[in-house]
Image (cartoon, rainbow, N blue to C red; front, side):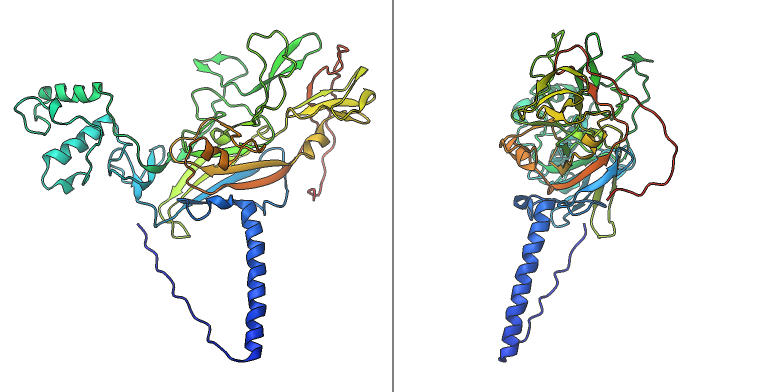
Length: 465
């Protein structure tokens, strides 16, 4: 483990002159102003109540000040989360078996920050038995895990009569007490604080748009109702996930189970789902949930890596996603044919050449002049993505426990999770082109309109600013 040298503090010589005193006053004012500015910037980047006590420092690479709004294409851009371990808190990196000492590609390892009983609970049952034997049978006990006495394992009453408190050497004679321990439901309880990582790539399986092919079940993304012109039907929203056998899904990520990624727009922001037995949508099916809920989008990330000693001289781990199409695209229901018309949620009666739309379960809104496409509605939406790490495994869905309208790191704490990093955010718009939205007959005239798509000659376009 790396060590740190503490730098000394240089004292400024005292001066009795008035100019020196006034200089100190000016310097003090400048320092206060700088700290105030830094506090505002850092506070936007990470939750203030999390600073200083986390095991990891999180930085979203190549993101601007969260107070600014970036502009990205609708896909093909990146989110890279870099977590740096605080060396004074890192005990080391654990693996279930040696070799390797440190995990390589597709081998699971654990950055361990605390282990009060000195018993690594990531060992499987066989590994726990070996460590248990080593503690009781070897002398000195430092050959095993020193002080590792499983606190909830049965003791003398489980040993065969007349045998020492040690594993019998014969394979067959070992069965009774191993079975007794196993049947008692005993396992080394997890008391560690750790971050699990399996370096490697998560690449979605290619599965055609059918339920099953070649024995692979297709992973189902979130769905919403739409009107197909004759009847209600369901349509998927969000990126294609591949099969249920790969690592790509809405929920926690096998390669980094503690990673949490939340978005306030798009398929990750959960709305009221349609009833399982409904033949048509319930009236409130697309409303926002109260309290708010959000999918953990970590399961959509592609690459996990780590470094024993990086450029910052710290152990670090990194999670990366090449953002797929649809992951952060708001879900827009739109009615472009209003022969009857309907009042929107702001009291505007909408009919004729206008259009009605709902974005991510938000208010029903009248688009004056109509919507041939939903490009501008989508492009104008500011999306906020929050990233942090928790001890152990993160849940698939997080709920707004404090009812403040945001699902964030505070809600994770209220859910009983233990955040081991700060929370970092990025805010952005995505540039969309030729988006049709999902047709929905809001005014009940039996027609929600269609969409015309067409190509045009290419050229050179300056990026939006």
